[in-house]
Amino acid sequence: MVSADPRRSMTETDHDIDEQWMRAAIAEARLAEARGEVPVGAVIVHQDQIIGRGHNERESQQDPTAHAEMIAIRQAARALGSWRLIDTVLYVTLEPCPMCAGALVNARVPRVVWGCDDPKAGATQTLYAIGSDPRLNHRFECVPGVLAEECSALLSGFFAAIRAKNDPRGTR
Image (cartoon, rainbow, N blue to C red; front, side, top):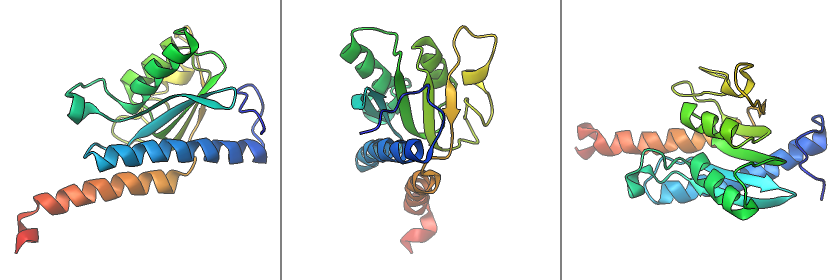
């Protein structure tokens, strides 16, 4: 297997690798959806192994910080025995929010790959560019749009189902 080394330039093989790991993040998002959570999933890869995985658990945990990325970061730090997640890549189905982007800076993650942009809270490209802000002590490579349509469809379907369930006209 080709390494997902964050220092290499992007090639066709890199794109295939990114899609492979994004599919693992999508599987995490589906777990969240099955539990009634917003379907966002994340995995952290180190030396071609998933060392952290997470999906949204805000509702079940009643914890506003229980985002997929935060859970994956904590798990990866435990796996490595270090808070410095050097030589790792985070794959997440939705562009990270400000809290998660800040945690990625603090964890020294060098590369972040996401599926669909977040027009309401995206903090790595859409609303903010935390990962490339020169005022911060760490920056990370941003790779948007990997399997974007599939990631977006998960979210759209989830929220459409909620709207249909809550629509009083749907009960007639």
